[in-house]
Amino acid sequence: MTRPPTHPRARLLRGLGPGVEWEFERITFDRAFSRNMVAKLLAERAEHGGWELDRVQIGPDGKRRVVLRRKIIRAVRTA
Image (cartoon, rainbow, N blue to C red):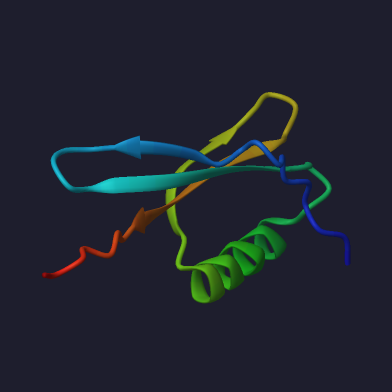
């Protein structure tokens, strides 16, 4: 089983409101990956990495462009 390519610079940070920050990761799946295989890979990523699905775009060439996100929890130092 081959893994889908991930780009090392694909992780982005974006703040949505006060105190809420999200980390985003972009993954591209080739059209050779079946729908079931993509679902299994994304479920595994969600279980073990804490990622959730942000958006999916299927291009005219059949490639799936997936954006995953997870909250960044910052530790606040107490006195």
